Structures are given as C-alpha cells and as structure tokens.
Image (tube, rainbow, N blue to C red):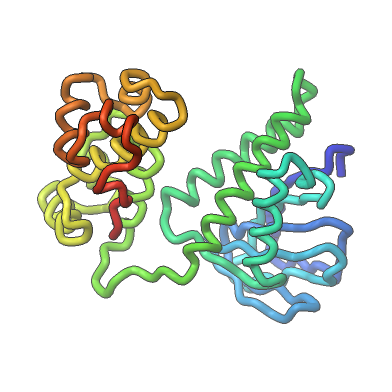
Length: 279
C-alpha cells in the first residue's frame, strides 16, 4: 500500500485457480469484470457475476471461488481509512458509503453506461499508480474519490428495479443523458445506447418520463443554470455552463419553465418548477 493509502490492481484468474483465505488491513471494493463465482468471507457467502461489486472491510477473512467453467477477473480498489479522513466532503462521502453498504454484501451496476464509466476511471487510476508523474498522489486520490462516489450513488439506488418489459439498456441512455446533458446529444446515439430503434426509443422515452428527449435535456440544463446562478449571480455564464448556446433561447426557456425571468429569480429566490425530472 503506498503512503497515501490507495492502491488498485486487476486479477484475472486462470482455470483451476485456488485462493487461500486472506485478510488485509484496508478496505477492498472488488468489481467482477468477467466470470462467475462466489466470495466466502467472515460476513457470509455471496454469489458473484460480471458487473457486481463486493465490499470487504479491514480484517475480514475472505477468499474468492471461481466457477470451474468461467473463472473470475477482478478489479480491486484498496483504500485505507486515513486517505478519506479529509477534507470534510470526502470524509462525509466515506462515512455515508460505509454506513449504507453492509460489509460483505454485493451491489450490481444497473446499466452498461455507468459500468463503463467506472472501468474508465479505474484504468486511469492504474495508470497513475504505475507512473511517477508530478501530482501522482493527488491524481490517485482524485480517481479513488470518483470511484467511491460512483459506488455510493450505486448503493443509494440499489433497490431501484426496472419496470416489467423495460428495454435492457434503456437505463444506460438515461445515465448518459444525466452525465453529458450540457453537451450536444443526438437522439440516434441515445437510441443506439438503449439498443432500440429511433422511433421505439422516442416513444418509450415519452412514456417513461412524460417528456420528449429535448424537453428532458432542457429541464436538466435549466436546473444546472439555476444552481449556478444562485452560486455566482452570473446569468449569461450560468446559461453557457449549462449547455445553452443561445442566451435568448435560455431566457425564453427559463421564463416558460419557471414563470419568472432569470433576473426575477435572482431577486426573489427559487421559482416554481425546480424539481428534477423523475422517471
């Protein structure tokens, strides 16, 4: 474990691999990249499949057991408590994550987009650990905090289940929008992410959210603009930061959605219509 208290590695298991029981003085968050199997620990036994993550606390005796015909490939994030003791925002995230995730239990990534995003940051963490670049410790810490934030949000939403008949990757398209709504988005790309035709996607999106894709994205942008306006008092800057390229269009959309102009909003506080879009 490096002196800054964060490490990571990937462990591809060969057929016939046997892991003896082990325990470590740090927290382990283990993503199953591929394969099937189980984890046996002092907190019980849990089945494992691709896309799930298991949390093992310090001192927990454990071993991973592979399915004979489909051995596991694991990506392991190792975190020492001291690395998350400060600043307060990180410390609070750490407390909430550990408090909301029972030791030894498993959570599952709900969609392919969020799983891909996690893998991308994990690879960046591995690269930073493997190179002696300026700011190495800071970048490693930043990557780890991003991974832990993703895992915390995953645990908060763990009980959400897709509705009956929900297209398998529709949730991935929603996650992509939530992540990149300030960028230009093509409905064709969203439909492809959801594994649906353009027409099927737009119809299902309207049924699911009550909004068109454009309306949904506009509402997210307006929510971000309101928050940034409250924080900075800068109307034009907030509009541009939220993805609006035409300020006059922003003014029209803001008045239509909120019932007040941006200037009135800053003078009088939050207008109606400030709730986030819900599915």
